[in-house]
Length: 239
Image 1 (spheres, rainbow, N blue to C red):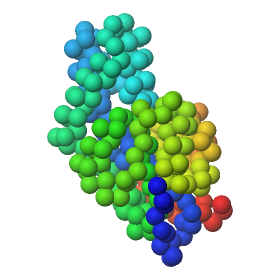
Image 2 (cartoon, rainbow, N blue to C red):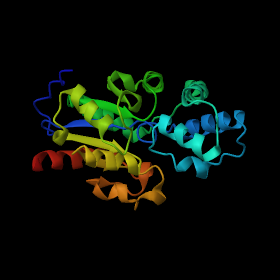
Image 3 (cartoon, rainbow, N blue to C red):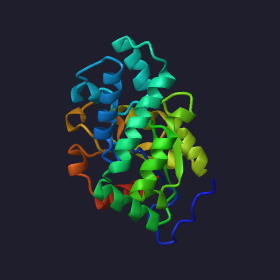
């Protein structure tokens, strides 16, 4: 894919920006939790708690389910469980998925400057496309990579490197926006800078966030599009 032509007035030079989806652009974790709870309940695992769900934030759906099978002794195949969870998730997401207002503003700021952008997520391609279409973010975010399309999910760098490849961008010129420590670690492994906006603020000191260029410790409540843009501008000047 040929990168968009940058606005000649852009201060961001050749930077490209790669967004995680869940917990970063949209508040979809409650839907993922409920889809997981319903799926596990159907297979005889009651009382799946939010605290248990939090350990999987930033991990691909497929890898989450593989861990479930071992942790809860499930005999059903990964593909079967994946299909059930995705069905529950898409039903919930279709009803409503909230975009973080400052993240939408950030995407729109970057789009106005012609900055190449992509989404790289641990969710299925079907879920990513549905969420982007349902929220209108697909108007600006057309390059999409699911962890299902690469060999290894986060914290491996595969999904971000594939996003850079599809954008035609040098990984060193890419900035990742992430909410989870495994994603921030994946960005570092890919040789990319990272803006980290922890979904779970209490996890801001997790080792994976240590290499983030910009760590917004207060999470989405503290994130602003203008501050992130200013940091990107400074990064571009130092590149």
